[in-house]
Length: 378
Image (cartoon, rainbow, N blue to C red; front, side):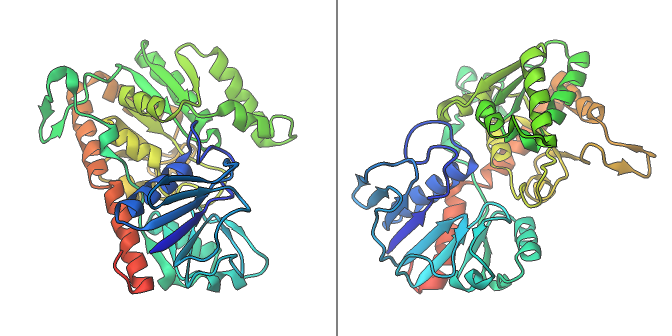
């Protein structure tokens, strides 16, 4: 079968070339690799490409505005039109949140035979905000990890704890990691880290995201988000133990995940439907980090079996007659850093969850979805 992925809106980070990758880029590449491995001909439109490239027998990459238009399946990443510019009997809307770039009116909804999503929460939020999409067209395919990126503990000869490989040799005691859009919870993470340092003085926090670029979009706005980012910038530059790593390429991200002992993500994003999964959190779990997450959107559904889930900061707890604070998160994080047995158990839980959510699993769900739509084995 012949399929095209139109990822032309993915202009924030490189897709065709090297460089820092966000979750959307990782997702697209994983599905493309999986379908190529199943013997299909796959084409990708990438906004960072200037000339077409043939990367394999059945793998073609194209710049925006110069590409074939006849396919068996056309997949449009985060943008929709009433009349997609492809001659394809099957069109798929690939959305990572509930606010893709949609054409005028609601007519676009009938142009897509399928809408793959990351979670049940993603599906429910999409239906609530985009009610013209038919529920039966939404398919939960999830997100995954490549376990090959997270090798066993080479320094201890594959030492095991219970049924899982130990990651002690990679871990830096007291290391925390923030690797998401700063708007999703960086300020709260810095608050938590301040509290953690009171209990664990050697604790460190690495921030791996293109903060400079994110701030560049907002810094001169007269807005709450601009003020938020300016305050984050000051604290990144002046808080002892905090290192702004910047935007490393994939191998650098994996190294940071392997070194992280506790990944705390107090997500509370400003927009609805923007925490429909958590690919970074799943990867940190694959790397054997203990996970401490907020109860925002899809986190409890996706990570409930492999993480400590806490109410989001600021949420009122009637039974305690108070609101949740950064100190509540810091208490859990500090205990994990100081109690080896408890950390090992949480590390095992996170790794086991990741092992049950691989890219092979996700591609298999995509294949089932496309078989249903085309009547052809994928």
